[in-house]
Image (cartoon, rainbow, N blue to C red; front, side):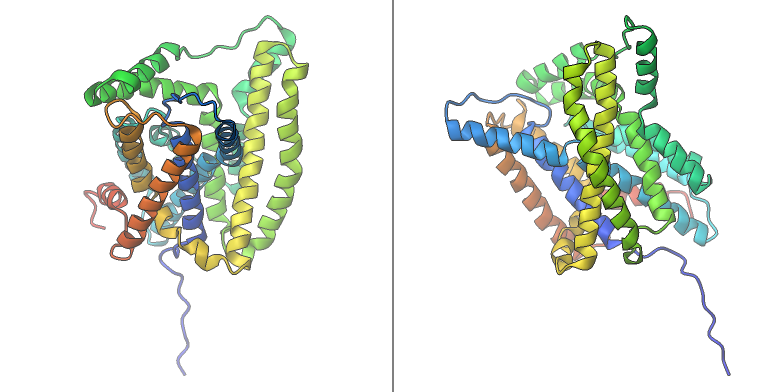
Length: 392
């Protein structure tokens, strides 16, 4: 009598809901960038009352839903993807952490290519902060969770707040970015393509990274990377763990509303500029995190418990090509709104429909491409370059 031998898989199966979440996150990013004119805040005046209303409703509604949250989902999934790649190599008896460091170097290059077109891109930030993942990859779940919580709480802002309590005259340091942003706005409004590239790669990148530091994005991004890695470790995206997302959703709903309310109330009660700035930063970071958990939990429940799974799967190819879509939207947006391109001078409502159009064109292309290939164009290059020199 032959006995079947159970063998462990040598790699993790692709997690469809992660691709859906990634696709929705990049969609939100693209629409926000479009109404911002890709960091080129130049809009025509209008006397039309209904257009003023729609402009305001679209701007406020999209930033409430996606501002700080779409990027948070993107960062969460970056950490999740690291775990999948690292654990796949562990299952095969390989070692991935040094290879991932090289992968981050490649991402830095991709980020600077992206920065040629768009100043506020995040790939360079991810490539720098991403080193926290291989450094913590063999730490215990408890240690990673505690570190993630500390980072999420914005430790520098908490330090500045503590100093302000004992020294009301304390002024927290702020990186000087005004001249950098002025340079990027000038070249966006009057420069040639080569001038735009030159400014974006220096003043634009310095301004973007300084903004990320001053607004807590560095610590928040690191925390989200770690939370994403923990989701992978515990297999929390699996359908069998819906009960965890039920608890997450309850916690997020309970936490979001008081955090959001306090964030809006603080300016009425705190007059010290340093305290106000950093207390608002902490509350905003936490409320955005809570709302991001609501969005993620909601999508996961829709995916696993309703008839919408097939509809949501329609955006999965878009998520699988997130790098290609993220960089190509910068190229398209820069060409549409900057002086070197078509220099569109349109309002928020029209810009929203432009963003939706970019998304739909990319989605159609992604669905066609992924029906013929296993990776997106830039994803394929990134993967091949990651494993260059290996026998894999």
